[in-house]
Length: 133
Length: 135
Image (tube, rainbow over all chains, first blue to last red; front, side):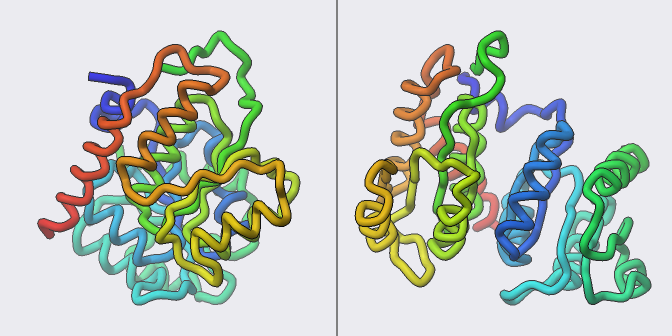
């Protein structure tokens, strides 16, 4: 078995975070920040891509998602999908528009208004992962 | 496997343009473990945004021929040849070609200890796609 297969099929030491964000530069910045913080990151450009990778049963420990995105699945739709298919998966939402109460009523683990301090987000991700462990 | 004792900062950056998150992530992950800095674009519009960000210092573009956006994969390659002649573009028309191209990059990459097996990447992607198809 080679390195790629090992890495792909066995549990990784670093937590895997699915970042869902349609704004390319924001997604890139968030992903880079999380990688620097030691997370493995999967980047999805919208809710439909997030559903595709979740449906493929890729190992994911936490989802960090925007709310307002193009496509057939926005952030709230993604949250509903996750709560139905992976009820214990932590989902942290971020938005410049959504009322936090709406996110929490849908089952979000935490909520950050945009723009977010990414160092604070990293702390929240770690706390959510510890709580889910 | 990446040799951690070598330089920690990759000196080459790869822009991957692929509309399939499963393929894109697997290839990107593969190249990151070879020591490359990787930028992931889901379409050619995002790729153009990445190319406009000169600070990203993209050295190589690995683009799916079927990539969507205002430009096709071929048109993106043509634009790069016309406007960024020093930038290398490798077009991939199939998953196997994309994996082989990534493996070729790994073989010539700065941090590679041994070559990765491209077929393993293809198998992994097919496994994920099959899981998705069963649902």
